[in-house]
Structures are given as structure tokens and as C-alpha cells.
Image (cartoon, rainbow, N blue to C red; front, side, top):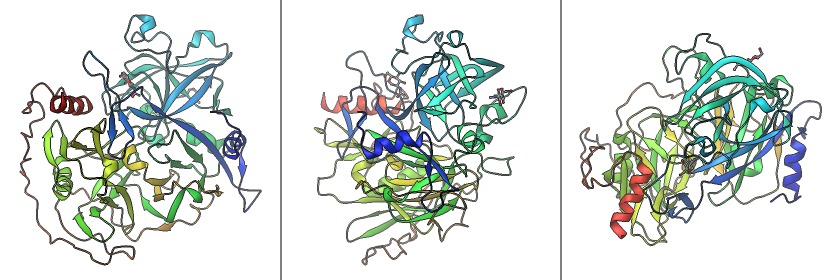
Length: 499
Ligand SMILES: *[C@@H]1O[C@H](CO)[C@@H](O)[C@H](O)[C@H]1NC(C)=O
Ligand SMILES: *[C@@H]1O[C@H](CO)[C@@H](O)[C@H](O)[C@H]1NC(C)=O
């Protein structure tokens, strides 16, 4: 694994800092590789063959939302203790599991905490306790509680000792989290639950700027293709070899009340379509706020929105937010097209379809209905895009990811993202509308296929009843499935179909 290729060297050297090619006095970039961690063996795949979720062999299903995740290694304390954490753009705090967590098997619980490591603060001579409490609950309802502190800390060899982290002595999660979102989303601000002393603190991206490791609080995330075992994050820079076409810039959208600036990495999805080599069809031009969330595997949209996509690709509602269809043939070249305001990110439909062991005719759509905003674009989408998160300027620049592995071309982000241009739809931010209608035309670009078969505008019925089964999540037509965890349900359905 630790081959001394040019890439590996760059990432170690990045520990120090890669000078910007154009200006050796200004501009620094910090490159960190991260691992794609498949949470054990799996027998479900996306239709293009990539492992997606894991199933426990016998006694029921034990599956969560985060089956494939992006992890980095931390060394904490003196002497140092190694802990692996999940890299998350959807949150802003760093925490690690404490050795005393009652959920660990070593303390009588059921989580194998040795797998990703725990931190014993009592065994570090340099640990400084902040004597303040930490508590977080994630979208998948997993939680972590504990206390804040600071210690000698390094991330893949890079010293980041000024970063506060929480030690969770009570968590039902088997892996800690490195949240790299905006400071305003930190749990210490009280925006996500009461705290006695609301404040922001310098989280990892901010500390990197403060210490002069980077010039702008910005980073680029490249997940590589779904089969790759590593991706990379470039703090303070971009690598133009990792995308094709132009980087287009869009603003973050402020979807929460009471804030003058956005607090999360939400942008406006301005429409969707389906295209093949020689045809294209717009699904919708309704706007919806989407969270770019590396800590989530699938994608989640309101049912009304998923229904439009399902209609366009021939999928029907099954249960528990899941849509299914007969798996398309191998030569089906349909792509889902995501429009962010005058530019598109495309994803082969097959990469959004989940099947079991490849022997099943039934595919499930990796777009799950969940009637909450923002919608979430998880790794299933993110893997197709090269995304630059510019936290200083509340903007995101994105382009189609390039998997060809051409030579790195890294540039620092100093006065704006190098080469990025404002998307033509930059100013069309989501305006609070939550009614989604089909139709419109997203294929007005130069790259649109000549034979555009744009559909006329039709208002989708608000009560559009899913055809395959009841839309009641709790009581589907297959009562043995539907325990609430959609991935468990998905596998349960696959099982009931092919047992
Ligand atoms: C990994 O799998 C275990 C057991 O199935 C589950 O409890 C845990 O939440 C999963 N962790 C992640 C990060 O996916
Ligand atoms: C912990 O304490 C240090 C030192 O006072 C402070 O700089 C830091 O912001 C605190 N961390 C949190 C999460 O409040």
C-alpha cells in the first residue's frame, strides 16, 4: 500500500507544503490522501459492479447509512495513539471514540472499537481538557457525546495540534468523524442543540489557514471512481488533472433561518434530466437545495422529486422510500444529468442502481425519498464530480471528474479558484419553493445532443401514488421488510425476491 510512487511522495511532502507553481512566495497547498473504507464484505453492488453495502451473514441485518466511507488516520497524544476517522463535509466537528465508551465490546457493548481505534486521554501526558461538553446527533440518528480537549495531533503526518477535538465517551458509532464544514455549523454554536456558552472555534480548515499552511479556507475533494480505494483532498488548492471541462462556480445557499450567511455546504440543484448519446430529456427545472455530503453514501430527495426521476427512468415505488425497476441491459447508456445553473454533472444511470450479487433482475434506485430539506447528494453523486469547497467565499466550484489519472497539476487557491468561472445560473438561488414540477429544458448548452426531446411542462400530481406499493413507510406490502433502515429493507426485499 505504501508504494513510493510520485503520488505517494507528493502526499507525504504535502505534509510540509507544496509551493504554488506560479508563485513560489505565495500559495501553499496541503494534499492528503484518504482511504475508501468498505465496511467489511458486501453482497450488494451498484449496477456498474461496485460494492455498496454490507450484509451480515445470518442474524438479521446490521446496516447503516455509511457503508462506504472516506477515512483518514490521526495520531493523537503523547505517546501517540492512532485513530481512524470519517471525513465529513456535512458536519464541522472532529471527535474520536474514547476508550471508555460503553458501546465498545471491551466495555461490554457490541461495537468492535479496535477496528478504527479509540483514544485514552488518561494515557496522554499532553492532553488538555477544555472542561466543556460535546454532543452531536447525525442525520442517520447515530450520536456521540463527550468532552472537548486539545492535544498533540497529526493528520497523515501533518501537525494540526491547534485543532480542538472531542473525546466521545458515549457513542453508538463505530468510527469517529472529522467534520470539515463551516464553523457556524459547529455544535459549540448551539445551532444544533442547546449549549451554555455558544461560540465558534477554529476547526481544521481554519487552523490550516491560521498556521499559514494554506491561503484560503478552501479544499478540493476528489473521490475518484467508485472502484478506487483512495481519493484525495487538497486543502488550499485544486488539481486540474482531476476534472474535464471548466470549473463552474455557484454560491452556497442559505437555507436556515436566522443566519446572515450559509452555515452548511448546500447549493442549488437547478434541474435534472436523462440523456443518452443521441437524445436528452429534461425531468425537471424545479430548484432544490442539496447538501454536498461526503459522509453519506446514497442520495436523498423529497418523494415528489424522486417520483419525477422514477417516472423518467421507469422505476416505481416499493417501500420505505425505495424505488425499484427491472435492471436495464448492459448496453443501456442512459445518464442522469444534474444541472447546477448552466452546467451539468453526469452520472451513468447504472451507477445509481443497486442490485444484489449481480444475479438479480431487480434494481433499486440510489435516490431514496425522504421528505426533508436539504436533499442530500452523497458519495454516489460526489464520485462523479470534482468539487472545490471555498468556505471563505461561501462558494463551490465543480466540474465533471476525470478518472484517467493524468499527471497532477496542482495550483493554490489565493485570489479565487484558478480557472473557475461563474455559472450562468449563479444568481438563481433556491428561493424557498418546495413544489416540484416536471418539464422545462436544461439542455440549452452547447454540449447538449442535437436531437433534444424536451418534454412539455406538466405539473406532477401532488398525490402521485406510487404504483408498486403503498407509500406508507411504516407498513409496506411486505411487512417483514420495512424496519426503517432503508438499506436493510433493500436487502430484505432482494432476499424475499430471490430466496
Ligand atoms: C459498519 O458496520 C457496522 C456493523 O454492520 C455498523 O454498526 C457501523 O455503523 C458501520 N459503520 C460505518 C461507518 O459504516
Ligand atoms: C478549547 O480550549 C482552547 C484554549 O482555550 C480554545 O482555543 C478552543 O477554542 C477550545 N475548544 C472548543 C471546542 O471550544
